[in-house]
Image (tube, rainbow, N blue to C red; front, side, top):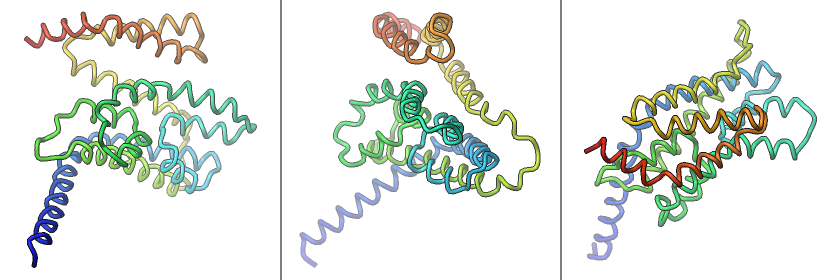
Length: 250
C-alpha cells in the first residue's frame, strides 16, 4: 500500500472518529428533549388523528414543516377554508422568534458548508438553546455536534408524531385541550431558564414588554411587536446586562 493511500485511509478513519465523538457528545444533551418531544409528538399525532387525518399527515409534516406550535395550528387551517395569506401571516407571527434565533447563530454557522442548510431548516427552540449554549468537547467537531443535536431533536418529534398518528385511533378518552400542551411546554422551558440564570432582568423585561404589547395590540397581534420591542430593548441594555452578569459571576 502506498504512503498516499495510507494517509487517505488514516484521514478517513480520523474523520469517522470525529463524527462518532461528535454524536456521542451531542446525544446526552438531547435526552431531555427526547422525553418532551416524544410526548408532545404523540399528542400532536393523536390530535391529528381525532381531527380526521391519517397518520401520513403528521409524519410528513414533522419531516417537512418541523415547527411544533405551527403544526398544531395547521390542523385548524387544514380543516378550514383555504386562505394562503392568513396561513402566511399566522406562520410569521408564530415563528417570528426564529428570525432572531437565526441572527444569533450567524457566527456559529460560519464555515459549516452544506450542514448549514439543514441547521437553518431544522432550528427549533430546543436545538437553538443547546447549540447556542453547549460546551462542545475539544475532540468533537462543532458542525457535526450541532448537526446531530438538530437531527436527533427532529427525529424525536418525527417518532412521536408518527406513533401518535398511528395509535390515535385507539384512544377512547376525551382529547379536548390537547392543543394546550405547546403552551405548557413553553412555560416549562421558561421556568428552566429562570432557575438556571442567576439574574432575571432580561426575563422580567421580556414579560413586561409582552404584557404591554398584549394590552396595546391585543391577543391576536402582539407577538411581532413584542419580539421587536424585546430585541430593541435588550440591544440597548446589552452592556449593562453583561456587566451585571459578569459581576455576579465574579
